[in-house]
Image (tube, rainbow, N blue to C red; front, side, top):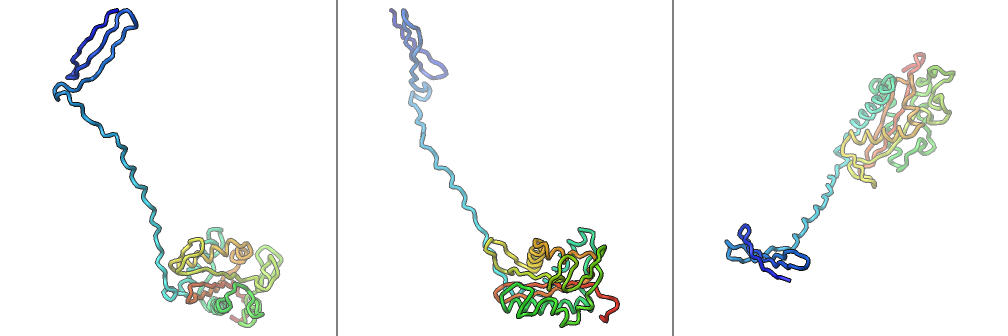
Length: 246
């Protein structure tokens, strides 16, 4: 067996190898450093870098809005617009929200919203006074009676052609203004308040049917906002009977 030592200079690196003859032949190379650099090996820092810290999500804080900064009349107007957007999208005529009869309806609706706020309850009946009673007390019951479109039915405050009850032409609702709901929803202005009220109404098929009565022509919307930011709203419908005094 013959052992041979071979010294190679490759690219400035000194390599030493041992050749074994008579057995399995192979080279074992040992690097002795860079000849040009005096043979001193360069140390490599293998310490792992600290991972970059994961950014922490910043939750934007909502700025509370004072209820007194919101305009109740503006909320009422926007609710009418929201209702009409949904009616026209279904090919129905929009409801008139201004004029003598709509103003009478609005005053009646506003009074009921205030009554709901005073009791803290969303209901058609407050102190035994139902929606049909309010129509009668405000001389609107006979005025707001009309024949149902395409059906043998008379629509009135106690029967909308779908069901007979004491709130057949009314929708009532509640939301918050200027503060967060428990689920994080935040109504920061009149537009958001109106949208929230109407959205809730259209989730209730009874209110949706009333607000989408095909040949209703007028609506009065009354809203009130409490000091704690609670909003109560009422909508009352009508199609004036031409034979009645308006």
